[in-house]
Image 1 (cartoon, helix red, strand yellow):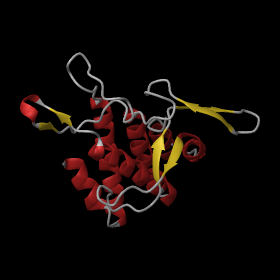
Image 2 (cartoon, one colour; image 1 turned 30 degrees about the horizontal axis):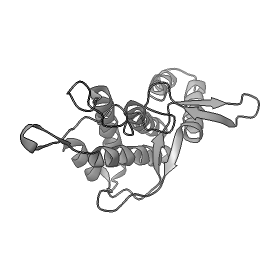
Image 3 (cartoon, rainbow, N blue to C red; image 1 turned 180 degrees about the horizontal axis):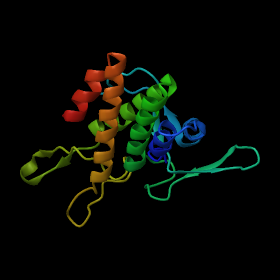
Image 4 (tube, rainbow, N blue to C red; image 1 turned 90 degrees about the vertical axis):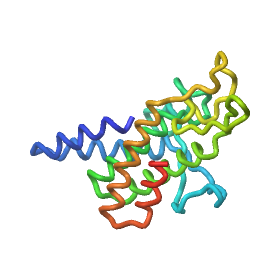
Length: 196
């Protein structure tokens, strides 16, 4: 999806052609329209300091090649067409943070913050699983899909996605670096929530 754009930006920066960077930028803007779903603001009790637009992601979008209109949004790896596949959401955080770092375009920073805040909210509010002896088990890695039912997986509980956790952590680190460079008030919020 978006993480491959880093390679295009790198190649453009190390060659005489800006064409690759323009392709990457156009693709990132297209993905905002086609793969991000605006989400309503969340309750203040679990909501971080970011007050901009929040975004969830869909995995696959079918686009009419003649008009550019969206024909259908679906998934090939998530739980359902309207669900939020954790790894896809993590890729959006990382991809838009990287795109901002290359372009300096505030739109990409806002999208990175909106996808990160939504991911963190879903992780922080995901139903808690009770462990042996009745104690709560807190997870730092997300479920494979935030909207998948919490069914027993051969006695192991909900399936977790450590790849999504690693990608999101990398994205939050890049995002924090971008916010530090801007001296933005959100830098500490995303860094602290990443480390907790």
